[in-house]
Image 1 (cartoon, one colour):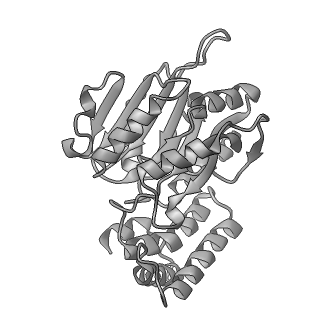
Image 2: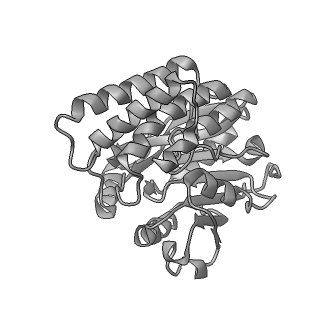
Length: 298
């Protein structure tokens, strides 16, 4: 992957991995057209024609189809990124960017050559509640107004997978771990950890704003996710892409939350299923089994 000349605009590839959300994806892709800096190529990695409706006919769009699973689909997209791309961006299919999002990513990369990975600031995250509609997310972004006048880049343990950008040369040869099946769960942290291990800097910036809708349709079962909440962080410790302290913090917080809230679960969360998966994961760990792929069979 090339490095742009000083007077050249960097070439940008925007990637969406999606399944079963064709209508939402259509709106999110259209919203990306409002960016002050447009991507040169959009790759949509999906499973079937039903996942993309008529987007295949859109100029500047490449649709690739393959096996399901977040890590698998992202890798399939990476395999189709042209060699002359300078910046690779991954967005969830339910993430809306502020119109300056890409411009601020480029500004950050230009400010410090050691920065390899950037995640933006999520001003509202529907993953922690019932989720936002597309219209609600638009309103939230409109209320955000102008971006902060001063760019602040803070080193972080890993990017947030709903919105992350990479200097293309920093991820040459890297792939998402396909043992992290289904929804992935910590696949972003693992990918960022691989970059850290290469000596690249991973940062969060305050000027690349966005809203994560947290759409509930298409997500995995509570039991499967609960298993991944325990096993995946511990598996990353074995790979040296997550510190043990961070992994234990993730596991303990999720198990505690699922235990307490299973008494009166939120309507949009399968707390009892997650707790069941947590317990299976703990039992597998005790028996020395770090098998994140087992989540697919639960």
